[in-house]
Amino acid sequence: MFDLRDLGSCTVFYNDARLRPIDHVAWNPVAPNLISVVPHKSYEVITIDIRNYRHPVGVKLHNHKASINGIAWAPHNADHFCTVGSDHLAQLFKYEKNERVLEYRAEGEINTVKWSKVNPEFMAITYQRSIEVLRV
Image 1 (cartoon, rainbow, N blue to C red):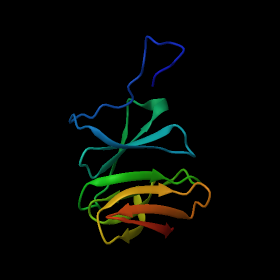
Image 2 (cartoon, helix red, strand yellow; image 1 turned 180 degrees about the vertical axis):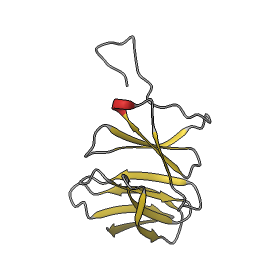
Image 3 (cartoon, helix red, strand yellow; image 1 turned 60 degrees about the horizontal axis):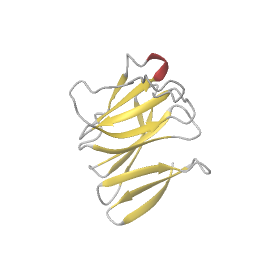
Image 4 (cartoon, rainbow, N blue to C red; image 1 turned 90 degrees about the horizontal axis):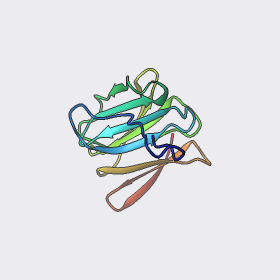
């Protein structure tokens, strides 16, 4: 975190212990103290509570068979997030229980996921040259 009022200091919330670059980051819009990151070519989502950033919470996702390519938090519920991956899967999870609640298989490697802020029952995914809108 960089405070523009004090240009001489900043706070690093997370450094990967295995020195992997961070590929994806998502801020929880309902619980604004939670930030999730996905390290490079990882199956793992790491969630940081910025109030207690020295103890990041690792969410081990054993459901993906290939690396995670994107993450999005639900705009209406602090407990739900979706991951998409190279294994063609979009998976919806409950954060508190570390539990998968829905899964969708696309026709190709899913590159991106975005949740609609206006209609939170919809999210969009991209794969190959396609965009699909999913109702969750």
